[in-house]
Figure 1 (cartoon, one colour):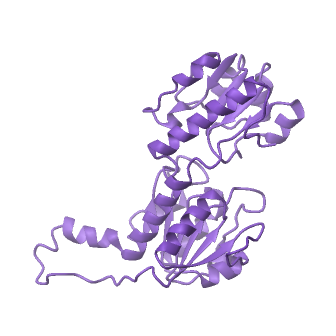
Figure 2 (cartoon, rainbow, N blue to C red):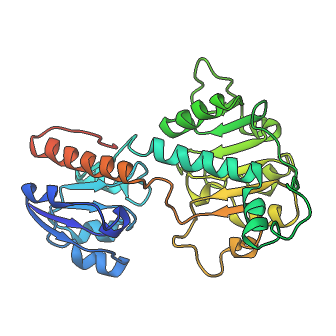
Length: 315
């Protein structure tokens, strides 16, 4: 078996990938662009991929292709329909990053709600040292206890965030494709109108693309915090940037972008200097523990495939 890893740097260069060697001849590439992908997959029986788009052209270039292993839960970078037509199996790695993404989501919410950036800057810039007061209490911040936390997408990550939010004393509102007992499930509009904190954890689909645009943002409280750790295209980035600049929302935390890395002409470049904005480089999923679980799941998926079994098959 020829196993080709197209973008191992996305898993972190500290991760030991030697576990793949038992399954065949392994060829590793730190990164791969679309033109390179056409060449690099030609002799591949198995492709291991994270961000490279596995399009029809790439699939057609891989005449021996039998299995594609996505090193993530989402697999919108792979032409699943075409793989199904050809009988090429595709697996993903579900549930591995819930704790990691939840931790970053809540960290963003706490930082933004508490204005930690402003308070830290006050000390780091030497202003506290020369002030006349023993403390500084502006900008005013509020406790999370008693606030409403709206969660869009209530899978493993959404549930993990909800558990932490409830521990803070927040009331939960949930938007989920299929309502779930024990939670107050509402439509997106209701969630946006009533929530003080809104975090997005849904997959990117035709239904969720541009789920939040200028129209939806008009319904949000002007003090509300919005956090997107799902996919950049779930919200309209230009509209979100405008909402921040116009003071229509309280702030944003974002770890995902419609084009990654974020381009130099991305709308969010206009809000980089805002204290109520936290932007991170798609790292929320990537604690060492989460990446280890992810890779071990890939190994488990390949092991099952070698035994003629299906594990974490996405179609």
